[in-house]
Image (cartoon, rainbow, N blue to C red; front, side, top):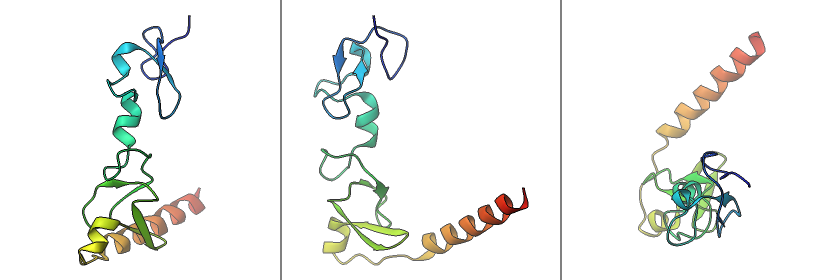
Length: 108
């Protein structure tokens, strides 16, 4: 008997069609995806795992459905196509966070 790789409570009875995890009936959706994949899937294509969120609209996006504008800015192809204004404030906040984190790590 192998346990579900998501909840670790019930016996696994199927495999997720995306990630291959062995899952129980409660952790498998009707479309064959596990609940983890359903929460981490690209909100544009619905087929690939997301790797970031769009800086403009905040949706989860995969590499194919988005464009990397600089090291910390990724925009979905839909926002890019409609010419959305890209707000740089989140990027500045991220840079400050990383700098503070690195200083704290160096102090340890």
